[in-house]
Structure formats: structure tokens, C-alpha cells
Length: 107
Ligand SMILES: [Zn+2]
Image 1 (spheres, protein in one colour):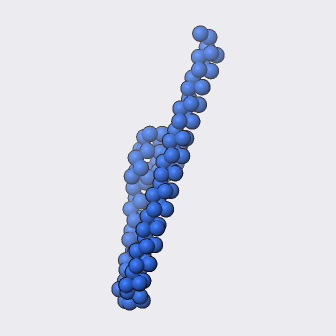
Image 2: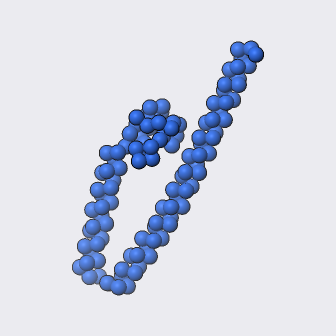
Image 3: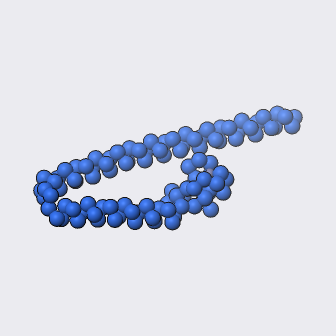
């Protein structure tokens, strides 16, 4: 096999590999979107029930404050747990454990 044939073969193999990773990332994204949509409807249902059970009470306001506090705290934790991909330099979540764009490893 000539050098250029070997290069062609290596390039095809890299291309297929990149395609597989892209497909995997798309599937992960679709799953995450569905999970977020499900969680949104659960949260909406809970807020709906809460308004029915305890309309405009001080507890209602306290709960809203608590939700805000937790969201802010989660954003801070997520930021602290972010790493940088060794391959592409993109910021990636260490919770995910791998770069969605290019690499199975995160530094
Ligand atoms: Zn990467």
C-alpha cells in the first residue's frame, strides 16, 4: 500500500470517528433536552398545585426565594466544577466527565 493510500485510509477513519462522536453528542443533547422538558413540566405542575393550595401566602414567597438561592448556588458549583478540554480548549462540565465536542477526556 502506498503512503498516500495509507493517508487516505487514516483520513477516512478519522472522519468516521468524528462522525460517530458528533452523532453521540447529538443523541446526548436530544436526551438532555427531553429530560429538561420533563423537569419543566413537573416544576410547572408543582407551582400550579402550590398556588391552588397556598395562594399568595408568605410561605409562597419564601419558597420562591429559596428556589432563587438554590439556582444561584448551583450555578456557582457548576462553574467551579468546569474543566477545560485538552483537545479543543472548550470549557466543559466535569460532571459530564468528557468533552461533548471532541474528546473522551477532560483535564
Ligand atoms: Zn474538546
